[in-house]
Image 1 (cartoon, rainbow, N blue to C red):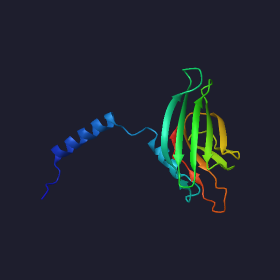
Image 2: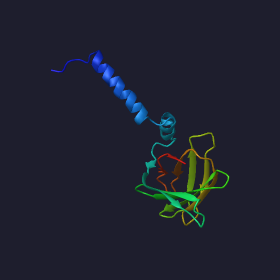
Image 3: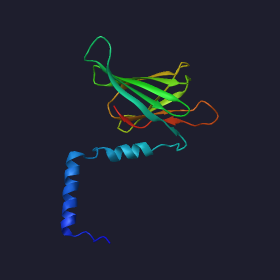
Image 4: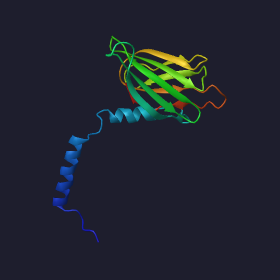
Length: 156
């Protein structure tokens, strides 16, 4: 039989919690991220999984960096490359596989408005002048199912 926790036990647990809060605190924007991820109008969307997230040098300038992220769902793969612009904003180049001319929406958890573009027949799309923050992509279906693909939220 287990004895109930006494004041000494509770004090030890409080100390452990204090150490944990210093060593591994939750992100300050955790509540914003959770609300953003749950705020989808269409709950029938297929959730893509992030399968690759790599920072690489780009171009001839060593100071330029780009981030490539790949998301996979059963029906579609979305690959994006996020590049830094000289003005502090970002550019996102993306590709859909299988290639299709579909509407792609860039949702933002921050004050910037959501935007959408149409991918070309090769599945290529671009979002330019993106402010750093938490974003998510929503790929609208091009068939009669109406099923969308949504990526997890990522911080740019």
